Length: 340
Image (cartoon, rainbow, N blue to C red; front, side, top):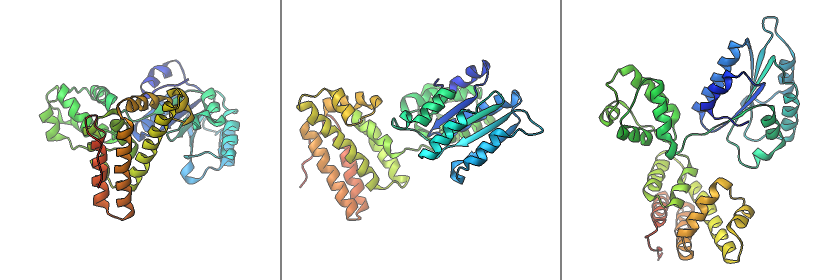
């Protein structure tokens, strides 16, 4: 069963499963999901808690000892297990063995990083999904962030006018932890409701954050202003131009390979599957191909090559200028750039 964080409360009203797997890249949502599960467990008499973190090295023998030993002071216990980015064969085997020991007096809370499609096909992931609910915790993207913020404000008995809510979404995109902190501060100020744009700009300090992968989708969609905004923020956050060149090169290579496959008579689905394009990104890639022709892709590739050459020459300023030119060149009506 797949549950999202906002569904946990209703799910727990029906009782506690023996195992939960919380995975994803958002620290706030992950922590809050774990806290909600701990509270529900304590209310049912799970008073003893053992925590094992991959950062400290997983001692599987110690984990099994804890799972098989009941305290004199508690008949029910929680085993919390934080998985590493990659689980080796030994870890996979021991985890599946541990899952086989789940019972009504033992609650297993497993947490982990964001998983790709291949990891979700592994034996250990399938065993976790069979043992209990999996709870993905991902930072809401730009389309869903305003709704999340509105719900968060409502939790603190606050409301915001539409333009204020839009500004708040821009101010905290990619950083729910900072957004939650600022909303808690707003709740203490006892400001008139609903909050106005002027209220937020006076009392809130923006803390948006982007990761390099978030640059790709706006460019494929032709949302150039957003792409340039993300690019500027990535530079301010210290992301290396070379990393962006690598990601963009991979994306452009995939687009050109898809284009060649379509020209040879393959269906888009066949080509995308062969190139291991995630199913949720296939519509985006197909739409991008419909608006980016062969000449445009060739021009984008030349701009990227110029950026990459600047990185190789340690000319950071030039590299970022080329990257900005590349972003602008994704515009539908932007003619292919001719390099000297």
